[in-house]
Amino acid sequence: MHAVVAREAGGPEVLERVELPDPEPGPDELLVQVAAAGVNFIDTYRRSGVYPMAYPDVVGVEGAGVVTAVGADVSRFRVGDHVAWHDSPGSYAELTTVVAERAVRVPEGLDLAAAAALPLQGMTAHYLVASTFEVGPGHDVLLTAGAGGVGLLATQLAASRGGRVITTVSSAEKAALSRDAGAAHTIDYAAMDDLATELPAVVRELTGGDGVHVAYDGVGAATFEASLASLRPRGMLVLFGGASGQVPPFDPQRLNSGGSLFLTRPTLAHYTATRGELEWRAGEVLGLAATGDLDVRVGATYPLAEAAAAHRALEGRATTGKVLLVP
Image 1 (spheres, helix red, strand yellow):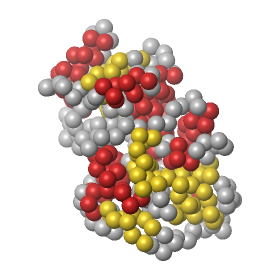
Image 2 (cartoon, rainbow, N blue to C red; image 1 turned 120 degrees about the vertical axis):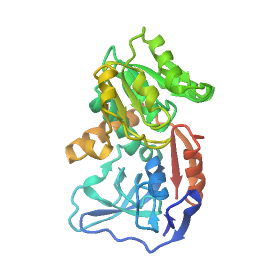
Image 3 (spheres, rainbow, N blue to C red; image 1 turned 60 degrees about the vertical axis):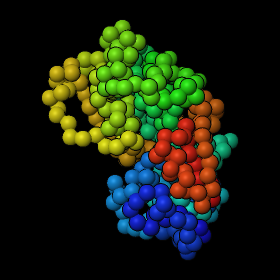
Protein backbone atom coordinates (compact mmCIF):
# COMPACT_ATOMS: atom_id res chain seq x y z
CA MET A 1 0.00 0.00 0.00
CA HIS A 2 0.97 3.66 -0.28
CA ALA A 3 1.25 5.84 2.80
CA VAL A 4 2.70 9.22 3.76
CA VAL A 5 5.48 9.29 6.34
CA ALA A 6 7.38 12.06 8.07
CA ARG A 7 11.00 11.01 7.58
CA GLU A 8 12.14 13.18 10.50
CA ALA A 9 10.89 16.15 12.48
CA GLY A 10 10.64 19.23 10.27
CA GLY A 11 8.58 21.23 7.82
CA PRO A 12 6.17 19.92 5.20
CA GLU A 13 9.12 18.91 3.01
CA VAL A 14 9.82 15.92 5.30
CA LEU A 15 6.55 14.30 4.18
CA GLU A 16 7.02 11.56 1.59
CA ARG A 17 4.70 9.06 -0.06
CA VAL A 18 6.19 5.59 0.31
CA GLU A 19 5.19 1.99 -0.30
CA LEU A 20 4.72 -0.13 2.82
CA PRO A 21 3.50 -3.68 3.47
CA ASP A 22 -0.25 -3.97 3.92
CA PRO A 23 -1.05 -3.92 7.65
CA GLU A 24 -2.74 -6.80 9.43
CA PRO A 25 -5.40 -6.16 12.07
CA GLY A 26 -4.70 -7.24 15.62
CA PRO A 27 -7.29 -9.17 17.65
CA ASP A 28 -9.12 -5.98 18.69
CA GLU A 29 -8.63 -4.04 15.46
CA LEU A 30 -10.28 -3.32 12.14
CA LEU A 31 -8.48 -3.17 8.82
CA VAL A 32 -9.97 -0.28 6.87
CA GLN A 33 -9.64 0.85 3.26
CA VAL A 34 -9.30 4.59 3.71
CA ALA A 35 -11.74 6.68 1.66
CA ALA A 36 -10.42 9.99 2.99
CA ALA A 37 -8.12 11.16 5.77
CA GLY A 38 -8.56 14.40 7.68
CA VAL A 39 -5.72 16.93 7.75
CA ASN A 40 -5.44 18.58 11.16
CA PHE A 41 -3.08 20.79 13.13
CA ILE A 42 -2.23 17.82 15.35
CA ASP A 43 -0.69 16.24 12.23
CA THR A 44 1.57 19.27 11.80
CA TYR A 45 2.55 19.12 15.48
CA ARG A 46 3.54 15.45 15.10
CA ARG A 47 5.36 16.13 11.84
CA SER A 48 7.28 19.13 13.18
CA GLY A 49 8.31 17.55 16.47
CA VAL A 50 6.11 19.68 18.75
CA TYR A 51 4.70 16.28 19.69
CA PRO A 52 7.83 14.09 19.45
CA MET A 53 7.38 10.88 17.48
CA ALA A 54 9.46 7.89 16.51
CA TYR A 55 10.40 8.67 12.90
CA PRO A 56 9.70 7.67 10.20
CA ASP A 57 6.09 8.12 11.29
CA VAL A 58 2.99 7.43 9.20
CA VAL A 59 1.10 10.70 9.65
CA GLY A 60 -2.61 11.26 10.24
CA VAL A 61 -5.02 10.30 13.02
CA GLU A 62 -8.47 10.81 11.44
CA GLY A 63 -10.43 9.37 8.57
CA ALA A 64 -13.28 7.29 7.27
CA GLY A 65 -13.50 4.19 5.12
CA VAL A 66 -14.76 0.66 4.61
CA VAL A 67 -13.89 -2.27 6.87
CA THR A 68 -12.07 -4.98 4.90
CA ALA A 69 -11.14 -7.32 7.76
CA VAL A 70 -11.81 -7.64 11.50
CA GLY A 71 -9.69 -9.03 14.30
CA ALA A 72 -10.58 -12.24 16.07
CA ASP A 73 -11.99 -10.48 19.16
CA VAL A 74 -14.09 -7.89 17.30
CA SER A 75 -17.86 -8.32 17.46
CA ARG A 76 -19.06 -4.73 17.06
CA PHE A 77 -18.24 -4.40 13.32
CA ARG A 78 -18.30 -6.53 10.18
CA VAL A 79 -16.55 -6.48 6.82
CA GLY A 80 -18.23 -3.89 4.63
CA ASP A 81 -19.21 -1.52 7.44
CA HIS A 82 -18.56 2.20 6.95
CA VAL A 83 -16.61 3.59 9.89
CA ALA A 84 -14.88 6.79 10.98
CA TRP A 85 -12.25 7.56 13.63
CA HIS A 86 -10.38 10.48 15.15
CA ASP A 87 -7.42 9.14 17.16
CA SER A 88 -5.87 6.34 15.14
CA PRO A 89 -2.27 6.93 13.98
CA GLY A 90 -1.36 6.02 10.43
CA SER A 91 -4.40 7.43 8.66
CA TYR A 92 -2.52 9.00 5.71
CA ALA A 93 -2.57 5.67 3.90
CA GLU A 94 -4.55 3.46 1.55
CA LEU A 95 -5.06 0.95 4.38
CA THR A 96 -4.93 1.45 8.12
CA THR A 97 -5.75 -0.43 11.30
CA VAL A 98 -8.16 1.09 13.82
CA VAL A 99 -8.88 -0.18 17.32
CA ALA A 100 -12.52 -1.25 17.10
CA GLU A 101 -13.52 0.43 20.37
CA ARG A 102 -12.36 3.80 18.97
CA ALA A 103 -14.20 3.50 15.64
CA VAL A 104 -17.73 4.78 15.11
CA ARG A 105 -20.32 3.74 12.59
CA VAL A 106 -21.09 6.16 9.74
CA PRO A 107 -24.85 6.71 9.39
CA GLU A 108 -26.51 5.50 6.22
CA GLY A 109 -26.64 8.23 3.59
CA LEU A 110 -23.61 10.16 4.85
CA ASP A 111 -20.82 10.39 2.28
CA LEU A 112 -17.52 8.96 3.49
CA ALA A 113 -15.65 12.16 2.62
CA ALA A 114 -18.05 14.16 4.79
CA ALA A 115 -17.70 11.54 7.51
CA ALA A 116 -13.90 11.86 7.39
CA ALA A 117 -14.24 15.62 7.90
CA LEU A 118 -16.16 15.29 11.16
CA PRO A 119 -14.65 13.05 13.85
CA LEU A 120 -11.95 15.35 15.18
CA GLN A 121 -13.30 18.80 14.34
CA GLY A 122 -16.97 17.89 14.69
CA MET A 123 -16.60 16.25 18.08
CA THR A 124 -14.28 19.06 19.20
CA ALA A 125 -16.98 21.58 18.30
CA HIS A 126 -19.51 19.42 20.13
CA TYR A 127 -17.61 19.13 23.41
CA LEU A 128 -16.77 22.84 23.35
CA VAL A 129 -20.38 24.06 23.15
CA ALA A 130 -22.15 21.14 24.84
CA SER A 131 -19.79 20.26 27.68
CA THR A 132 -16.80 22.55 28.40
CA PHE A 133 -19.05 25.61 28.46
CA GLU A 134 -22.64 24.63 27.79
CA VAL A 135 -23.95 27.33 25.46
CA GLY A 136 -27.58 28.27 25.88
CA PRO A 137 -30.01 31.07 25.07
CA GLY A 138 -28.65 34.50 25.95
CA HIS A 139 -24.98 33.55 25.93
CA ASP A 140 -22.54 35.73 24.00
CA VAL A 141 -19.80 33.63 22.42
CA LEU A 142 -16.47 34.66 20.90
CA LEU A 143 -14.91 32.14 18.51
CA THR A 144 -11.53 32.62 16.84
CA ALA A 145 -10.94 31.45 13.26
CA GLY A 146 -14.65 31.40 12.48
CA ALA A 147 -14.16 30.09 8.94
CA GLY A 148 -11.93 27.20 9.94
CA GLY A 149 -13.06 23.61 10.28
CA VAL A 150 -13.91 23.76 13.98
CA GLY A 151 -15.08 27.36 13.66
CA LEU A 152 -17.80 26.69 11.09
CA LEU A 153 -19.09 23.65 12.96
CA ALA A 154 -18.96 25.23 16.42
CA THR A 155 -20.75 28.33 15.13
CA GLN A 156 -23.62 26.22 13.82
CA LEU A 157 -23.88 24.21 17.03
CA ALA A 158 -23.65 27.25 19.33
CA ALA A 159 -26.18 29.23 17.30
CA SER A 160 -28.59 26.28 17.26
CA ARG A 161 -28.42 26.25 21.07
CA GLY A 162 -29.41 29.91 21.27
CA GLY A 163 -25.99 31.53 21.58
CA ARG A 164 -25.06 34.78 19.86
CA VAL A 165 -21.79 34.01 18.11
CA ILE A 166 -19.08 36.57 17.33
CA THR A 167 -16.24 35.25 15.20
CA THR A 168 -12.83 36.49 14.11
CA VAL A 169 -11.90 36.14 10.43
CA SER A 170 -9.16 37.41 8.16
CA SER A 171 -10.95 38.16 4.88
CA ALA A 172 -14.30 39.15 3.40
CA GLU A 173 -14.68 35.64 1.95
CA LYS A 174 -14.18 34.06 5.36
CA ALA A 175 -16.58 36.54 6.93
CA ALA A 176 -19.28 35.49 4.47
CA LEU A 177 -18.72 31.81 5.25
CA SER A 178 -18.90 32.50 8.97
CA ARG A 179 -22.13 34.46 8.67
CA ASP A 180 -23.64 31.69 6.55
CA ALA A 181 -22.84 29.30 9.42
CA GLY A 182 -24.83 31.46 11.82
CA ALA A 183 -22.42 34.06 13.19
CA ALA A 184 -24.24 37.18 14.36
CA HIS A 185 -21.12 39.32 13.95
CA THR A 186 -17.74 38.81 12.29
CA ILE A 187 -14.60 40.78 13.12
CA ASP A 188 -11.80 41.12 10.57
CA TYR A 189 -8.68 41.11 12.70
CA ALA A 190 -6.24 41.16 9.78
CA ALA A 191 -6.20 44.96 9.63
CA MET A 192 -5.76 45.48 13.38
CA ASP A 193 -2.44 46.90 14.55
CA ASP A 194 -2.85 45.85 18.20
CA LEU A 195 -5.05 42.79 18.42
CA ALA A 196 -4.83 42.57 22.22
CA THR A 197 -6.58 45.92 22.68
CA GLU A 198 -8.54 46.49 19.48
CA LEU A 199 -10.36 43.16 19.34
CA PRO A 200 -11.67 43.33 22.95
CA ALA A 201 -12.86 46.89 22.32
CA VAL A 202 -14.96 45.74 19.37
CA VAL A 203 -16.28 42.75 21.31
CA ARG A 204 -17.34 44.94 24.23
CA GLU A 205 -19.02 47.37 21.87
CA LEU A 206 -21.03 44.48 20.43
CA THR A 207 -22.01 43.23 23.91
CA GLY A 208 -23.06 46.52 25.51
CA GLY A 209 -19.75 46.85 27.33
CA ASP A 210 -20.10 43.53 29.14
CA GLY A 211 -17.87 41.17 27.18
CA VAL A 212 -18.66 37.57 26.24
CA HIS A 213 -19.64 34.70 28.50
CA VAL A 214 -17.18 32.38 26.77
CA ALA A 215 -14.30 32.67 24.31
CA TYR A 216 -13.30 29.57 22.36
CA ASP A 217 -9.72 30.08 21.16
CA GLY A 218 -8.03 27.57 18.88
CA VAL A 219 -5.44 30.00 17.52
CA GLY A 220 -3.37 30.28 20.68
CA ALA A 221 -0.42 32.63 21.07
CA ALA A 222 -1.59 35.32 18.63
CA THR A 223 -5.11 35.69 20.07
CA PHE A 224 -4.86 34.58 23.71
CA GLU A 225 -4.50 38.08 25.20
CA ALA A 226 -7.38 39.42 23.10
CA SER A 227 -9.63 36.51 23.98
CA LEU A 228 -8.91 36.89 27.69
CA ALA A 229 -9.63 40.63 27.59
CA SER A 230 -12.94 40.02 25.80
CA LEU A 231 -14.51 38.12 28.72
CA ARG A 232 -17.07 39.50 31.12
CA PRO A 233 -16.60 38.87 34.87
CA ARG A 234 -16.74 35.13 35.62
CA GLY A 235 -16.41 34.39 31.91
CA MET A 236 -14.51 31.38 30.60
CA LEU A 237 -11.63 31.19 28.12
CA VAL A 238 -11.47 27.78 26.47
CA LEU A 239 -8.05 27.40 24.86
CA PHE A 240 -8.39 24.36 22.63
CA GLY A 241 -5.54 24.75 20.15
CA GLY A 242 -2.39 26.59 19.15
CA ALA A 243 -2.53 27.19 15.40
CA SER A 244 -0.32 30.29 15.79
CA GLY A 245 1.92 28.75 18.43
CA GLN A 246 1.64 27.74 22.06
CA VAL A 247 0.69 30.23 24.77
CA PRO A 248 3.64 31.10 27.04
CA PRO A 249 3.58 30.62 30.83
CA PHE A 250 0.69 32.47 32.43
CA ASP A 251 0.20 34.11 35.86
CA PRO A 252 -3.11 32.81 37.32
CA GLN A 253 -3.51 36.03 39.31
CA ARG A 254 -4.61 37.63 36.05
CA LEU A 255 -7.80 35.60 36.25
CA ASN A 256 -8.53 37.30 39.56
CA SER A 257 -7.91 40.84 38.33
CA GLY A 258 -9.81 40.17 35.11
CA GLY A 259 -13.02 39.41 37.02
CA SER A 260 -12.76 35.94 38.59
CA LEU A 261 -12.27 34.42 35.16
CA PHE A 262 -12.00 30.75 34.24
CA LEU A 263 -9.32 29.28 31.96
CA THR A 264 -9.27 25.69 30.70
CA ARG A 265 -7.19 23.79 28.16
CA PRO A 266 -9.31 20.79 27.11
CA THR A 267 -8.54 18.04 24.64
CA LEU A 268 -10.87 15.72 22.75
CA ALA A 269 -9.40 12.56 24.28
CA HIS A 270 -10.77 13.49 27.69
CA TYR A 271 -14.22 14.16 26.23
CA THR A 272 -14.41 10.79 24.43
CA ALA A 273 -12.70 8.70 27.10
CA THR A 274 -15.56 6.20 27.43
CA ARG A 275 -17.35 4.29 24.70
CA GLY A 276 -20.64 5.82 25.79
CA GLU A 277 -19.41 9.40 25.49
CA LEU A 278 -17.69 8.68 22.17
CA GLU A 279 -20.88 7.22 20.71
CA TRP A 280 -22.97 10.11 22.05
CA ARG A 281 -20.79 12.83 20.53
CA ALA A 282 -20.17 11.02 17.26
CA GLY A 283 -23.81 10.03 16.99
CA GLU A 284 -25.02 13.60 17.40
CA VAL A 285 -22.47 15.14 15.02
CA LEU A 286 -22.61 12.49 12.29
CA GLY A 287 -26.37 12.24 12.67
CA LEU A 288 -26.87 15.99 12.19
CA ALA A 289 -24.66 15.85 9.11
CA ALA A 290 -26.59 12.89 7.71
CA THR A 291 -29.90 14.73 8.03
CA GLY A 292 -28.50 17.96 6.59
CA ASP A 293 -28.90 19.87 9.86
CA LEU A 294 -25.13 20.37 10.12
CA ASP A 295 -23.36 21.69 7.05
CA VAL A 296 -19.93 20.13 6.50
CA ARG A 297 -17.66 22.31 4.38
CA VAL A 298 -14.74 20.52 2.73
CA GLY A 299 -12.61 23.44 1.65
CA ALA A 300 -9.85 21.50 -0.12
CA THR A 301 -9.08 17.95 -1.20
CA TYR A 302 -5.59 16.72 -2.06
CA PRO A 303 -4.31 13.38 -3.36
CA LEU A 304 -2.16 11.43 -0.92
CA ALA A 305 1.03 12.34 -2.78
CA GLU A 306 0.39 16.05 -2.12
CA ALA A 307 0.25 15.85 1.66
CA ALA A 308 3.03 18.43 1.95
CA ALA A 309 0.98 20.94 -0.03
CA ALA A 310 -2.00 20.27 2.24
CA HIS A 311 0.13 20.97 5.32
CA ARG A 312 1.48 24.20 3.80
CA ALA A 313 -2.04 25.39 3.05
CA LEU A 314 -3.26 24.57 6.55
CA GLU A 315 -0.32 26.17 8.33
CA GLY A 316 -0.46 29.18 6.02
CA ARG A 317 -4.11 29.75 7.01
CA ALA A 318 -5.05 29.52 3.34
CA THR A 319 -7.87 27.06 3.98
CA THR A 320 -11.50 27.21 5.02
CA GLY A 321 -13.51 24.35 6.44
CA LYS A 322 -11.93 20.92 6.32
CA VAL A 323 -8.88 19.74 4.37
CA LEU A 324 -8.88 16.10 3.23
CA LEU A 325 -6.39 13.70 1.67
CA VAL A 326 -7.84 11.12 -0.70
CA PRO A 327 -5.78 7.98 -1.39
